[in-house]
Length: 280
Ligand SMILES: Cc1cc2nc3c(=O)[nH]c(=O)nc-3n(C[C@H](O)[C@H](O)[C@H](O)COP(=O)(O)OP(=O)(O)OC[C@H]3O[C@@H](n4cnc5c(N)ncnc54)[C@H](O)[C@@H]3O)c2cc1C
Ligand code: FES
Image (cartoon, rainbow, N blue to C red; front, side, top):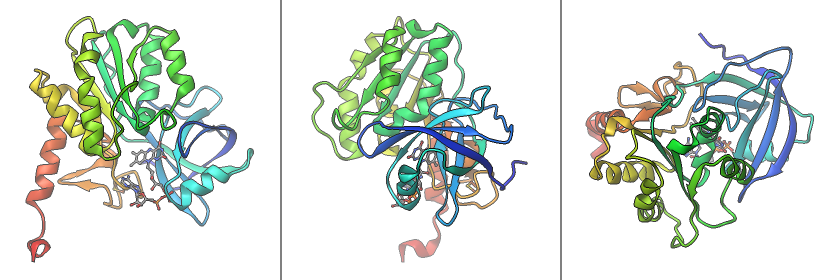
């Protein structure tokens, strides 16, 4: 079983990467090396401020260096953004289930806002293995300022990845508006691929992922090849505390990557098991 005791990592570099978001580069210390796969996450802690889940934007390399994108939403993320270079942090991982590899398959990747971060390492591997012709990215963000991973997007573009960017989307603020904005360009994105996708990977607000899943199902995509990343508040990350329960599943262990079929099943269980007093 994975330990609850964190390893030590050092902050090596940082730069602004979209509204309220900072790109951070860390190195694992003491000879610790992780074998992580795209879509997995790690727990990051600061003494006195707590611990939270973060996605790998790039996976740990042979030197133990990896990157993450941190969006300021509360105390821990605010403190992380203020850390000086050379600061030590606690890290535990890698945890959770990765995205499917889908080698040789035609894949549409759909991301909304910061949802591009958990897909970044997967897209990177797709480029390294020469599968850009069979991959398209549909990315929606509220405004130009809020788009993340500018450097990665430019590298993917140069490597031949076809992308549709939100050039003339109507402004959106709610997940429903984001779903609409994504839906407007869905057919355009599908047309960029050599054939109808064998699978779709999607990450963004939950309502957006479920909405885009519905739209693609109406276009003939089976719900068991639509993959999404379901985020829940996580405390232990290794199946001990129960904070991440959805229906009968601990999302930190079975997820965060799940098919739409499985997600619907778990969300339906959650509604069915509401306690009787909840509606009193
Ligand atoms: C698998 C996974 C991967 C993640 N990857 C990243 C990442 O790469 N970059 C990043 O910036 N954040 C990521 N997060 C979210 C991050 O873990 C939380 O935002 C974290 O709680 C921030 O801590 P905080 O103390 O700054 O804010 P908190 O005080 O914990 O939270 C601030 C506000 O955000 C809400 N909130 C916190 N966590 C969640 C959640 N999971 N779902 C919905 N609302 C939430 C709280 O209710 C509160 O209103 C991820 C979460 C999960 C579960
Ligand atoms: S986060 Fe503790 S059981 Fe999932």
